[in-house]
Length: 406
Image 1 (cartoon, helix red, strand yellow):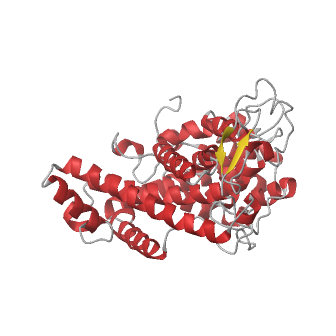
Image 2 (spheres, one colour):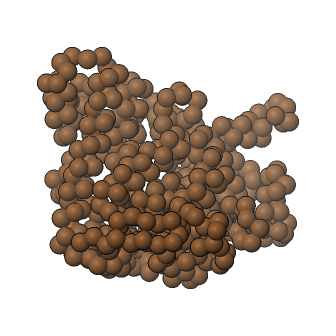
């Protein structure tokens, strides 16, 4: 069933009744008073998307690791290019399902903002350093960025995004039902906005989550082949890869490696997207949802792959884990990255006066007056904000016996 929704706020298109709609948003934490004024020609979720795009944290993703550190090569993906690719896939699928593509795009663009330098290696090191100080987890750090750490607006900290976008980021991996999942920043946001943490997120947020899987499972093959971590022949037996390669050969015969790799990646994305759209459409029809809350209150995620495709995707994930993410060349980079993050954290904790001035007074009071736990959180915020190259340069400044004014 389709509902035609037309409003004066510029949102004029066909949306399904279970899609999130800007004028029906549950609002923002801080009232800005201009949501539907003359400067509000953008919809609620378009404003959210644009605020993410213009944030400092989003720009810094340009030099944050996806798998390969920035200096390994100009063609490998970064957190920025990955986030843009996730947003494109999410936006396209949202339109096909008559969901709100602006909301899906906003959640997709924001989902990786909390990543440390050096990708998961940096996160593992920082989480270990923060074990006695409340821990560290990149999804919670994303919430901290969106609600506290971005300080650009005169009236509030954070980006003051809509309830639906913040809910989507907080719960895009599913309901938060255990104490281990309920991190302090998310708990505080829930206290302010009542995010209904025990339910699923909107269909748009579920879609952004699976668009992330589609993007990295497809594009990591591209990067790994480019890096020479394995060859086409090594992956020709894998599910979906085997079928895609056979179709390419039937259509084009033998083609050069660059074209073959691109054809493989684009066909993998297409088959993943088509399966997700087909299964999700069937799920939505079975649920007969008439409101976004019907999606949230469902007993399982409504946006999903078919069981057969989910099995194939897990096989691809396992192959990449062994042959790319844990390849010895990547492990060597990972080892160095962990040392950089650990060294920086330990030095800043023991000598807080080596932090930049703006971070020594980050809480509008001297860092030396804070508890160890509060101090560690400031240091974690600082390190997590770094790009790969800034972290490496900061490490060089502090540990190499050379000029520090660089």
